[in-house]
Structure formats: C-alpha cells, structure tokens
Image (cartoon, rainbow over all chains, first blue to last red; front, top):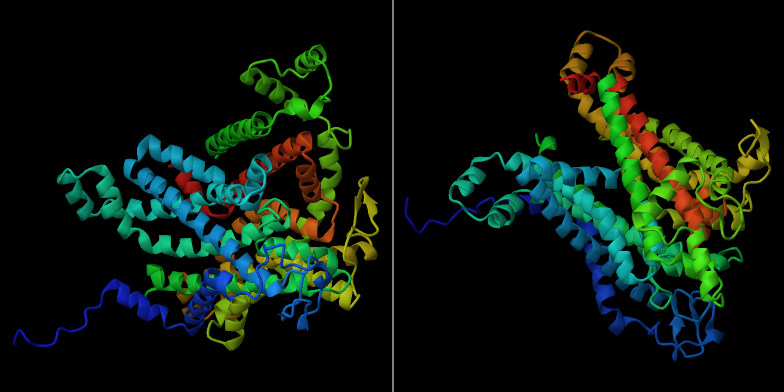
Length: 299
Length: 324
C-alpha cells in the first residue's frame, strides 16, 4: 500500500450527526426556515418597508387597514396595519428581532449557568451535589410560567428583566441534563487520567468533561430556545414582558386582542403565525437531533 | 414505607419554608409597602405610628416570623383593592380554576391516550406520522394565540360558542360549578380545549414512547409467543407499564395546568385564580400576590407528594429502592 493512496473519508461523530440529521426532510426544512427567519430578523432595519419604532413615519389615519391596502404614505401594507397605523409586516420583522434576541440570549446564558453548575455537581459530588440538585428539584417542581410570573412581579417589565426571569426558570433543565451525563463520563478512564496528571479542576471540567456531555445539552438547548421564545411571548401577552415601546411578537398579538371581536383578525393573526413558524422550525430540528443523539434508539 | 413517607414529608416542609422565605423577601423587601399604604401627605408622627402598627420597624427576620405566624392562622393580609381577606378572594375563585384544569386534563387523556397508543403500535402508518407531526404542533402553538384563534373562529365568525365568562352555574356543596349546566358547559369548552392542547401532545408522545419501548421487552415477546391475543398483550401487559410514566406526568401536570390556566383565563376572561393574580400584579395588590403564591406553592407541594406516593404504589421498583 502506497502512502499516496487517497485517504478514506473518516467518519467523525460530527459527520455522522450531519448525515443522520439530513435523513429527515422535516428537520432540514426546519433548519432552512429557521435560517430564513433569523436572516429576516437580523436584516429587518434594511428590508422592512417601514421603521415601526419611528413615530414620525406612523400615521394614525392608516390605523387598522386591511391586509393588502395602500396607506397614506404610499406603502402597500401586505399584512395590514395595527391601531396606530404601524405596518404589520415591519412590526413582525422587528418583533422577531426581539423575540429571537430574548429567546436565544436567555437560552445561552441559562445554558452557561446551568451547565457549569451541573458539571460542578457531578464532579464535586457530596454536599455540593446535593445542594445544587435540591435547588434544581425545587426549580423544576414549579411550572416555568409561574416562576417567571413571580420574578417579573417582583422585578417589573423590561427586556433585561425578562431575560433574567427566563434564565432563572431555565438553568435547572441544563444543570440536570449535564449532571446526568457528566456522572456517567466522570467514571471513565480519560477523566481519571486527567486527574492523575494533576490538571487544574477548571480544565478537567471544561476541556475534558464538558465536550463529552455536549450531545444531550445541544438537544435540550434547542428545545429550550423554542420554549423561551414562547414563554417570552406569553409573558408579553399578559403585559408582564417587554415594554410597549419595543414590541415583541407576543405584545403585537396582545395589541390586536381588543380588535379581534370586531373581526379585525390580522393584527393578532400574522404575528402569531410568525411565532408559530419560528417555534415549529426549532422544534422540528430539536426533535430530529434528539433521535439522532439518543444512544438508546440506536440499533 | 413509613420512613420514606416521613422523609418525603420533611422535604416538603423544607421546601414550603424556603418558598415562603423567597416570597416574603421578594414581595416585602423589594418594594416599600409604606409608600403604597400610607398617603404621601401623612406627617412624620403618623408615618411612624403606621410603621409600628404594621410591624415594619422590626428587624427583617422578626417580620418574617410574624408573617409566618399569621399565615399559619390562615391570615395572609387583606386585599388593597377589594378590601377583603386575600385568602378568601382566592378561595372564591379556586373552583373556577380547578374546574377548568380538571376539564382540560380529562380532555387530554380522552384524546391523547388512544392517539398515542395507535401511533406507538403502528409507527409506520401515515396516520401515525400525522399524529406525531400534530403533536409537535401542539407543543409549538403558543397557548394564548390559539385561544385567540379559537375565539375568532368559534365565537366571532361561526358564533357557535361564547367567548368569555363562565355562563350559568349550578350549586354543588354550596359552590357554583359551570359544568353542571348546559350554558356553563358551552362556556367551558373553548378554554378547556385551549388549555389541554399542550397536554394532549404530551400524553400522545409519552404513550407512544412507552408503547414502543415496552413492545421490545422480553415479557411482551413471551406473552406473544404464549399465544395471547394482541388485544390482551396490548391492554393488559403493555398498558400497565406505560401507565406509570403517563400517570406521573399527567399528575405532575395538574399543578402545571393550574398555573398555566393564568394564560387561558386571561384570554377567555374566565373568573378564576389566574385572572385574579394577573389583575393583582397589574395593580400591585401585594397581599393577594403573596397569598396566591403561597397557596400555589402549597398546592404544588401536595401534588408532588401525592404523585410520589402514587408512584411508589404503581412501581414496585421504587419501593425496593426506598427500602434499601
């Protein structure tokens, strides 16, 4: 055998993951849709027909126009306008920005906090473990909506407060997941070897233990982003979430609530569709990832 | 068993104390109750008298003990808005919430279990795939938005069902219930469906996963090899084992349902505890917020305890672990 022979494609776990993920057209569809939504959200200031935050361009005379009608400023409102004459399409694009920012941001922070505490619990064991896990149990025995409600009742409205509330209610899911897999991993030889080398604890935790606990964490993280987005929308709908000056999708829906009974459905309908598509896309990806990354379902 | 129960009870007690501390600190230490309770043009002497009367001059830990002492006697303060004992306000609205929660639990089992069973037994049929896709939708649909859409379709456009309120009620044990009258039933239907969507999906997925895992077990293979009818294998051997996770999760969901009815009640203007707490948060009616939170914490602890006990009864393996 010569050294110049073509190196066969090595099947790395990542490649296997990608190929198995792509086996489900639904999941790939979810990924594509989510990518488009994320792009729309990021590019909103450049592609939206109107700046919904700029009160100077809003005309109250354009209020509650039906989808497809042309407003006073000459813009065609494809999805209609809300009670303040705000173009719904632009409102949704900007709303997506806030919803995604809050959802992804809080999920990432919660992941950071939860994963660190979960790792610590599994690695340290003993009293530290008991204390952290008691806290997790306590957190998980209360429904997220209630805990978030409680925190926001104390803190008040605001994007930052919503993120804090979401992090507090979500970290426990990550902590439990990471601890579960870290407990299995830490008995493995490579951890023992790392400990024999007297590596600093921080390095063992984050360079050795964490990478091997990632698969379930990714699954939980994906699902939690969807949950966070939904929860933020719910809180904003209840009037406890984002302030009225920066409406997320939930608040847009809430604004349309009072006009629904008079048949002006579009103010609530379209933001809800945007919310739904976002959450479904994320859940479809997460669902397939869970099947791919779950060793129990392997034949 | 007695030892296990005792330990569980002690844990519950600890959680209750911890939560009461959190609620106390959250509500009483974050905001200043004096600003709300005393008129701004009260003079210094009046102010100090009020502070002393309310016990706000005591150190925080003593205030907490006073709060706990009163709470143990069922006194969680008077509502600023209604000027009624907060606990009484909540108890008045509790039946409406419980009715809604149980109605939606009932719907979720009624719809979710057969669908999940079918999807688990025939995983490759198109209908099963449809059921599973539908369950993803059930998880993804934001409850409040579905509620709005239900109102739009069934109340505004079709005009079949009423959109808000409880409708006529009938008395049972001196408490008004909606499900006893036809008008009340028509009022509860939309909110109950709305609240049950998430749980229907949950039950479908749990049942399907349970069926798929159990069908591969040796005892099921053995039962089939023995020549038992598929019906008996499914409904006696498989069913018993998938009921454990389903019962646990549905039981645990009861608490979640009661909590989540906050959203449904707000959408459908259902006069339950959830609507009360949202209204109270919006007007900063502190005693009601505290009372609601403490009640719900207590409710949760009881539900969790009941589920744990039920679990040990249903699953002998847990009993063994507890003994060991």
